[in-house]
Length: 504
Image 1 (tube, one colour):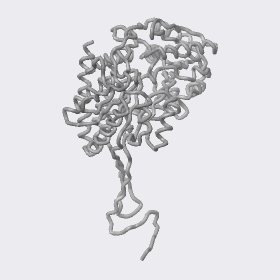
Image 2: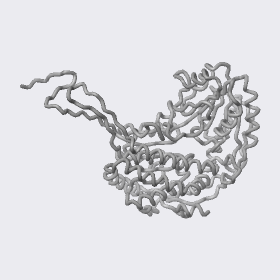
Image 3: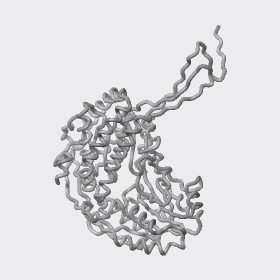
Image 4: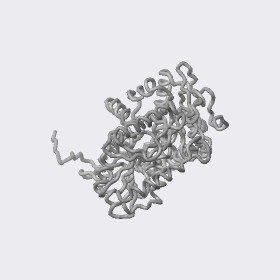
């Protein structure tokens, strides 16, 4: 495939790189085979980073930070602007690689690269707005303010479902804050990381920067655990399961490091009696079927007013019947495969538990071939154990409600708290859902689905979702350290709270 060559992907690739330099040509470890989830065929291989590779990258990162933190933030922003421009040039080919290696359809692959471009643009502007505050001191002739300084090395551990965008969310903001990024991508999508690092390398080499963006592709035991335990990594941004998030949080906090955690979602849409079904149906379909249900913001539950239940199910089944499933690179495909056989097993096991609980499959429920499954609609109850869990597959649970209070109770009665939505034409219902007695999620939408991150807004959730925020608002502050400064411009030394300490 020509786009692999254009992205610098070889049959055999290396797993460690100091940004702006050539890949470390280490072949002492096992290779990772990148598997096309649609066909089961090997695309290419990557030699995993070794312990020595890890140390080389960390030493280079520390050296890079010593210089990078001195560069004015607007100048750092100029580098990110060029990264964004390089991504624009490679959008089509990188989007194709995302589709090939992860399995999402080509439109979504291109859309993910567009997210990278958008966050780069956002970060460029943010580089001139790393604002502190000026405060009044209680002491005469004193001035007090706060400022923000670069933090250090940022470890970014990403998941397979967004193999490039989440790196950009972190790396672009970290860079304009004066930090260094060390990326451990998912072992399921190593080629995407190789491609992104190659793109970044071209920009870094052009300006003579070394070590701003670095990559370590390898096992959890060699790369992941070392990064979690390494005091040289001041912040770890982790995207993945709640189970692993607990481990990351525990290990990093024990050494007083910082974390950003983007964990599981069990996202719901409330459909009230006034909802416009012409908006509801495509929103649900995209949210539940897109990326084969493998987004943390995928729609998992529909909580529908009982008077609209039959109508919604009928129209939703009709929509599902129109979903073209197959080759993610084909023009008319709307849903590609699950990422691997483990995900297929999770899909099958979830549906077995549905049947055991007394649920009814209203549509789908079959494995078609290989990693390809049917998008599935299930009549369910919110309290069932399987509904309480996040299954990374296109399974949608339909739950009826009587009153709005009931709907909100059902909505919030899960351990996760990432994304939420309500479809309504009733202003009071909308405002209730967005109020303190409404959705308990980090994201709450009206007449927009649950799926997708909008650059500029802080992305993240509450409860078992981890509480982290990325991509917008004041999330840049997580990549910096706060410092409060008090300046005495008088000839006296008054103490705080009027304390006297007379030594005369």
